[in-house]
Length: 306
Ligand code: FDA
Image 1 (cartoon, rainbow, N blue to C red):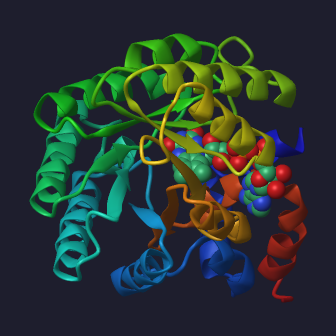
Image 2: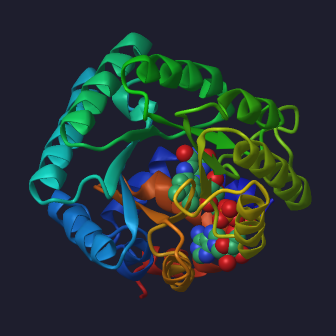
């Protein structure tokens, strides 16, 4: 209930404006987002890479409604990839892109063309792109777009969400040689007709998907902070005779950082998802929905109290 309310608030432009102009909760925002500028993202990336972690950078923004905004998002990715390359941060760092930030909802072909430009820049920089997954109304379109991008850029990553009832079947289809698949639980408020609602059902679906991806020939990217699912991932890798370099764990910037370190020290690959930019509101609200305990701090800071 609380989760759905927070996720509904994530879509409220009135609350977004309020949050943007309030002396916002620096502590809460900074915990999940290292900064607004490209240099903030590059600094955070350098620190993570120096500590043995890999990175996927996300220039924050979604539901872009103008072509100019989509172009400016694309241009930021092109600049970012060029800086990552010149600073020697590739291939350890790649980028994550939301098609809605490239105008998927206004002109699908345009968003695909822009994604191709970003994939070209990533290939020139010696790295890859993963296409983030958004709500279920765009799952088919997004997976089709990834399939098209893969014709030219085989390493383009797809994201599958275990809370969707369809995902187990998608995992089987995607677990093919050369594919990179990020498996996450899913972060949007979805109806029961398409998505499991109970945590237990979502976790069970996640495990079935892990089995499928680990058994297949692709490169699984297990995106979760859930300690039980991390252990199950390690167990299944052993079961299917996969070395630690044939899959990776992924976690979000600022969440379970000790666990990220522990896994790296144990010889596993861990990629940290690093979001940056001005449009942190939707991203932050989804993180608060996962952890309502942090909500109180955020609301208090909107009222001006630290
Ligand atoms: P769960 O939410 O059950 O949390 C397990 C434990 O992790 C908690 O008990 C707590 O200890 C810790 N934790 C989790 N969230 C926390 C928080 N916000 N603050 C503090 N502690 C927290 N989703 C999507 O729909 N599309 C996408 O493209 C992506 N991409 C993506 C990339 C990466 C690298 C990650 C890690 C996640 C995503 N997600 C995503 C988000 C994902 O779907 C999911 O919402 C979150 O990862 C939370 O789910 P967990 O699996 O971590 O489990």
